Image (tube, rainbow, N blue to C red; front, side):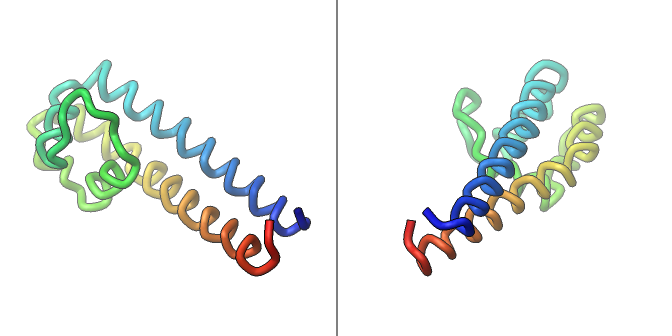
Amino acid sequence: MNALTIIACVGFALALSAESFIQAKFWRLMQDSHPAQLAHFNIETGRHPLARHSARATMLYLRDKSFRLSLDRNGTGHCNDNRRSMIFSYWATVITGCLLLSPVVLHGW
């Protein structure tokens, strides 16, 4: 494994860990404190209430500001407060994943 691949692996692992932590914190607070907002998310994204929440569905819900249509004002505030960090962590993971694939394709594992 060359140095560039190792650096890309570490960057991807850090981005994925940060995204996982941010997502877990967001969903834990949503489930505990804002169940009406969580129900709104499930309706807007067409997901079953017990299904796991995908990062992409969450990012789209926050990016498009669909959360503002909810009647739960505290839940809307929770989504708005966490919107930037959630979207940033999602795209950081996507970009570092692509950066990881580049040296693997060009130089091999």
